[in-house]
Amino acid sequence: MALTLMVLVVLWSYQRTVDRDGAAILSQAPILQPVNTLDALSELVVATRLGPTTYLTQPDGRTVGLEHDLALKFGEYLGKPVRFLVLDNMDQVMEAVRSHRAHLAAAAVHVSPHLKTQFDFTLPYQQSRPQVVFNASLTPAPANPADLVGKRLGVVPDPVHLEILKQLKGQYPTLTWQEFPHGDLDLDLLQKVFEGSIHYAISDSNTIAIAQNYYPDLTVAFDLGPDEPIAWAFLRNEDIALYQAAKNYLATLDHSGGLSRAVERYYGHINALDHEDATTFLQKIVSRLPRFSENFKRAQDISTVDWRLLAAIAYQESRWDNEAVSPTGVRGIMMLTADTADRLHVSNRMDPDQAIPGAARYLQQLKDMVPPRIPEPDRTWLALAAYNVGFAHLEDARVLAQRNKLNPDSWSDIKKMLPLLSLPAVYETTRSGFARGGEPVNFVENIRGYYDILVRFEKPHRAMASMMGGLPRLGSP
Image 1 (cartoon, one colour):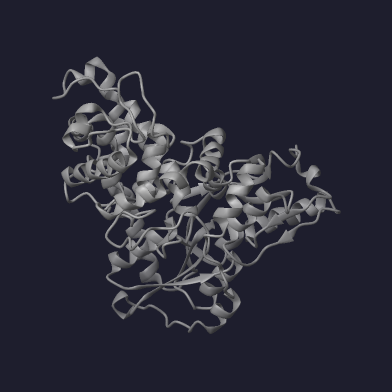
Image 2 (cartoon, rainbow, N blue to C red):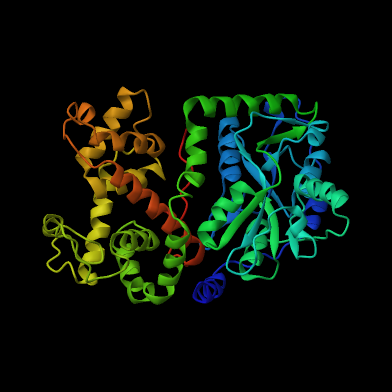
């Protein structure tokens, strides 16, 4: 635990400090005119809030988040530019729509009975439930809400969570809590739990699931309610044309599979790493990564592969051990086979100066072989699967996807097909035959987990505009 905290103290220093005033941003935002027709709309103004599931700026300056991506795609659907009004908390987000300073709220808004009296909601595209979280290595586990009394309990100003606390206050009059209304709200709050400055926090299950990769000792104690739908919110009975367009957009995106791919981008791999995996990885970032980080960065310079992705691959392959050897004969930090090394002109697989650039070139070759119509991030995930199992077997899985009326260009569908390549009834119908298809799925999902951690905590190397980057732009549905 002490080493993990030391790692995070070092890595937190890499993150951009948030210095902002959501109340001032809200008060200074211009009041919008009613949208009588879509032709009259000059830009789409979206109210959101900081957080890993909504809108977050990475260390390299790129903005990511499921809500951010879906809203940008809605702007493309409308043919209108998108302006984000990034506020501090959910109260401000809803007030922005209520006061006509934003057209819609896209901020992981829960569809609650209270809000439905004031807002119209689109098709739900996710769900989450409120949970109590604690640091299992520092704080005793609470068994029920009564155990929260007398403890330092934190919450962000979310109407759903505050309503739960008010109800609990009726049962436990001495229950107190502290609201944290500013900053990178969700992760800041959970970071406070991890470092022990508060005992417990209330957050939503989606945010907690993401944060557990960064702060592996975070543990869910119990739920405070059932799953609730998440949707976009528009002011009730206003901007009807825009509201209807949003419903049509999300329905179309859902029907095409684009919505599930958008969700998969952020959530498809969050359970790949268990507590021990994430803890060990954070420790090795300090104890082992610095020895090879310059090798990874030089390899980025000769390819279009982010050095942090190369580092994630190397960790999955060898745990950053340049002397690693497997019983099957693969060896070195990138665990290259002899045949692959020969093709890449790598004479010494144990030499990271040769093996790491060789692996970068190999991954780039595989990405170039993926059909150019396939956007990021699927392009990279498919190339990684081919890196593990071979491009021919990847193509077999893509053919299987077509046979099963799935999308051969979508990683979320291909990872369902790959394990079937180990079944005789299936592989006997393919061009390349048997493959241990479950292995590339685990390979890719683990790398995605390690990569997310590195992107959050490690600085980028040079400009990444043309590269995949930490969390790539959402591809077309």
